[in-house]
Length: 318
Image (cartoon, rainbow, N blue to C red; front, side, top):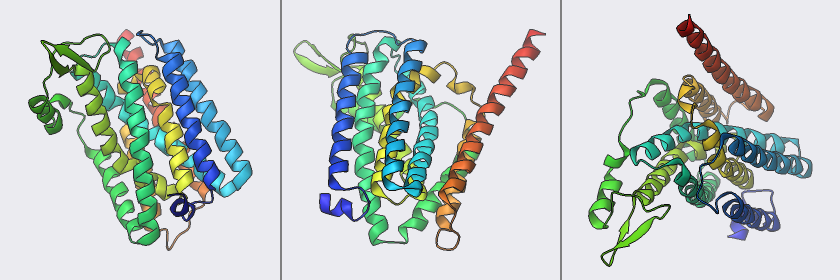
């Protein structure tokens, strides 16, 4: 594995190993410090924790920038920003999942922790496979680009109608083949009733979150390879963005639905990087241009959402 990874990245084996160990340590700290007791995460605590994760990511980015040069440093920052923006849309789906399974806020932290852990393992696998595909088959670049453009169009025109995640085929299948209970038992994924081990709604919520991450990976993995084709940059920027997903959820949970221009913004970002990937053999767009374009789109979507919401609230008060 080490030999094959060295073919797709400037990062040596020790950096891959050190980074992976560091991520495991951070996850242990996260579970031990923030997730030991069952409690409702406050907005202030989530904001502080989210700031810590972002600071860790930016500090690592600064070190990587200094050690491996401006180009890879810019690619890392851009990849992190793209994944972070896509994860905000993922948060809206997670919010719907918790609502569908009626998971109280004090139990959501545990589900999100294991959801993030599963997402890290899935993204790591998909990124390594994607790097190998790009290395062996150049035409995969065009497939990834087409996926991003198609996803951007889907984001632009899809309905905001809410669907019941409990009716997905895998949730219904699990409910048929595995004994389940309709009631929660504190923060447990499984309980024993009458000598039979049964899954709780907490477990099904976790399965639904992992399913959605597989779906979102179809967008984010091609997106990061449109920004960089270095496997370590793609892997590390994705993982560091995902690490802060749980804290970001508790920061944005109450008003993520008010970001009405989030999807058009994400559609523009995916369209831009998809076209960049499709034209990569003919037009070379510098990394700093990609960073400026993506940052501008995100800022425009956020500020426009805030301004429209503020204007509507003023109109209602009059």
